[in-house]
Amino acid sequence: MKTNVYTMERKIKKLTNKKTFWDDVREIVGFYDDTVFIEDWDIKRLQRVADARYEELV
Image (cartoon, rainbow, N blue to C red; front, side, top):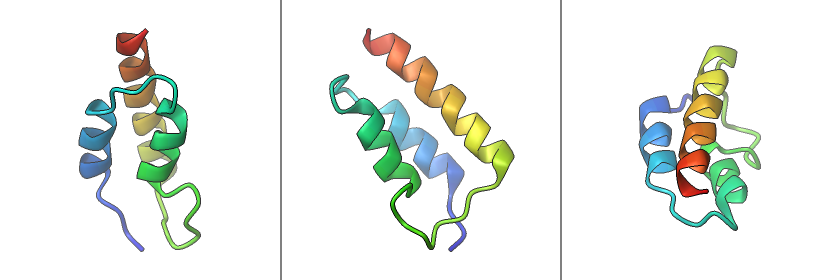
């Protein structure tokens, strides 16, 4: 399944719970779903977005 990286990015930026943050990110990007395919460069982009958002919550 092709995914919309921009939608994932927006969802990550809206996360507010630091305690469940990384589990929430995994759910958003389909980590537990074998049908989701994300290109390597998109994964790196989402990782940077998630890292930045997590730092904002600290």
